[in-house]
Length: 58
Image (tube, rainbow, N blue to C red):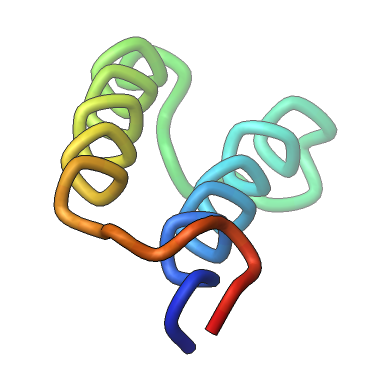
């Protein structure tokens, strides 16, 4: 899984607002989407800072 964790996290978290926009699933209430996206950005930056493997390389 080395080299794929940050990408996997980014893809998984990107699906939540997309599904919410289409109203297929409402995992995050609209009033909390700003905080959700801020949290995702912070966690993604922390994951990238912690990892040393190039993207998609194991």
